[in-house]
Image (cartoon, rainbow, N blue to C red; front, side, top):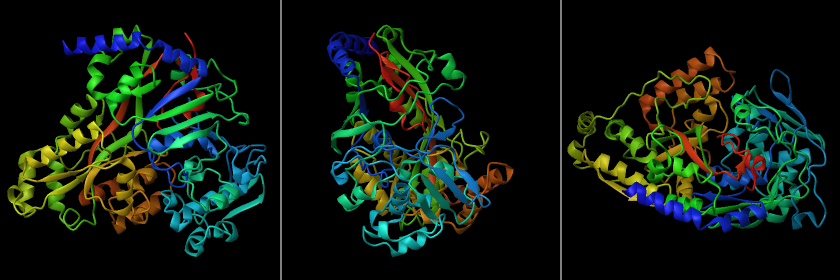
Length: 576
């Protein structure tokens, strides 16, 4: 009866909202929902999926992931070709495309500003600029000649321009040379990340290096309106450089007939509106009213949308709604602050918690069993992941209670309440927190749930003020090094190691692994690191994310993929 009622409401909404949809189609505007407030649109500081949804449409990088090729494949974007690599893998010489124009800004004094190789050097220096607190410093820490010396010397904004870095050279406007301290095979991936988006010196000077709310790039869309609390409106950049729809792809792309626009100039849209909608049911109702064009299927609506065979229910097919199942490189776990005097110092207490949480029921409750239970600190899809790996803990309340006794807190007696920080204030975040709280209270552990805005949560994470929380990671590139940099000492704040975990052996092994190409030697080190991490237990692994995504039939060329962050330029809106 409930399903029938929900369906009736859904069909009524569909029947009453065609004018809004037609209006959006006429304007050729894509409508996108964001799950939380926007932390930053500065490419040096933005490092979450919400901000990235905007940043990658505004800024461009030297390289991008091919929209249709799987396994993921890099190709030139602002570079003319893949880099020339010399000096035993330590010198990268990159040629930059000509006549790439930036979005207009008063800093350019009414004149067109075109891309120069020096602009990439500016941004890499910004990553090293201590007062900026960039989340991307870990990418180049100790890897580029002279960059760490620059980090020590640079104090004022003008130092970005005036203090040279020996390993960063721009002999002319179309040539960038990067000299590394040692071979770093992952460098090519780094050059495809938003952290290495070019930034003109004029803009840095004009804003005194404060770009949190300023985004001037070379991308297909420029920002017309922006508010970190409500969203952004963007418009097609009329001077966007030549960029064309792919003419090749993998078998899936060919079978789904996604290459019909091959060779056509991008972007197809006239603009994108990003609206912040924290609650999944708000997003769902907006989707039904065609106020947004696509979304991940909410857990509460899963059974009415997805049929028993895993496809789309017939009632929604009749409304020209499409369903796609998207594997991701996103995964989740519970984190402990290893500097915390309680949790960080008592491994037996962490082990009790690890065995007290029913992860399978969590996956059932919050992902409708779409999520895949984690078996490793590495996600599927990266070389070296072992599908037969196992975790050293499992859900067993008796084991958890026994460990709590060994930890010195039988039935939780004498144990202070643990603070569980929530990533946001929406209903799902609160429900997930209540689930974890309920599991721990079964064995006698008291939990205080601390609500946050998402930017507030990120700021606590940077400052090491979290005690216990759910953490997650969307892979930046398909390499174990990207996972493991979350666990090394030099990635402590402002880097991404929010647990403040530190083990000298892990650091040593990581440094060896980072220099290796994929192969048995690297995979052996991955396995050795994983054993150490499991023994130290900074993380309790939960699940690997898979997404059921619904989108309206007027959306063409849509193929969601974790690493293709600049996907919006490929999308087309097509009237029935």
